[in-house]
Length: 283
Image 1: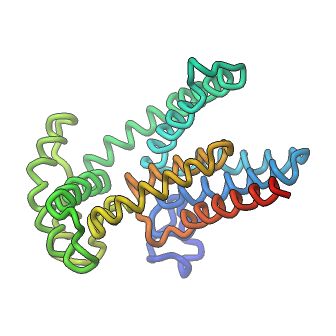
Image 2: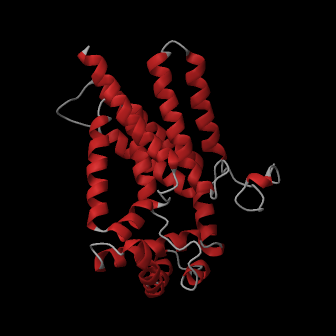
Image 3: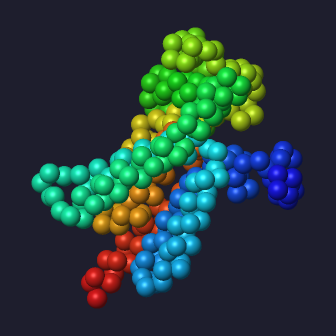
């Protein structure tokens, strides 16, 4: 139903890809991962014997995996599986469970790679030639890194609209060199060119990098301490740990952070769950 419920969309454009009423299809990845993992965790905690709920959640996620066309989601998902499996890979603590989890992670990784690899590669090359998404994201990342390095204390929430466009312009030669050397084609820079003359949509497509650009060292300290705390809080909670890894990679690479309420929901749930577990253990 690409034309269905257009009044609920951010624009009147047809609804060709899974967006869950968000502005971009890539934003739905964290929504599905966060809500699926939280729900699955609650089901496994409160309804351990209820197989229907577990299958429903897993099948729903697999359905999204088949339908979404977000290339960023697939890349981050594969990286998350790799990083998640590393926690079970230890020569000092070899066990049947750890070996099994590493094996399962490897199998899932290669299944996803084989099923979606060719489709993803074709879409990736088509995106480079015809669309602006990849070039825009890489260009904004390069520009933001330059701003961060030259303004370690941050630009603030207002002046980045001056510094960022200047660095976007200076990144064009680098982008042409990167795409020409690796892919043998020239990137589509039309959206980046528009961002240098308009503040509409001006910002880094990475929530972490945008905050680092605005807040500098203070934002870096916030992210380091927050991730360290949440990582420790999910040390024994495998499902929530995977969700945390995926979310952190997503906001670091390809989605914004400010209006992604499900990310803050995940942080709040991990915090509440930790206090709930500690409260029960002291009783």
